[in-house]
Length: 145
Image 1 (cartoon, rainbow, N blue to C red):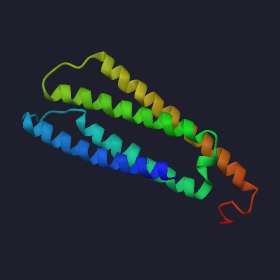
Image 2: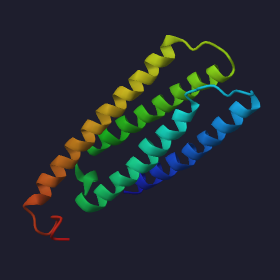
Image 3: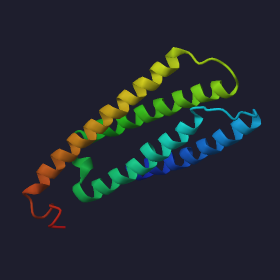
Image 4: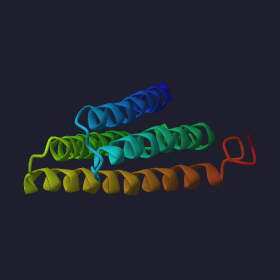
């Protein structure tokens, strides 16, 4: 459970800092156009901070970490988010300084999104297994708590 708490907290800090980087980096380069740097801030806060807080609540309610799929979800999802955010940050930074981004960066961001999606599927499979496991046990069911 604490792993989820610290991960969510970490994403909150990095998400806020990425927003600061976006604002200050574009201001320092007198850049007013569109860039993917703003997406880094949004991805980290929404997919990192908020989603993991929701997963923390699901852990508290259903014992999600007891599922054999939980660690697969956690590491796949987090790897996908880190790769996606890093690729967006590189692409956005290159845009601000006026350099062309390579298609490899877009491909890496795509792989990050695939890992995120795989993590979400694993989350639902883990949640399903815990709901089914607690359904027949009054001591651990939602209504039994």
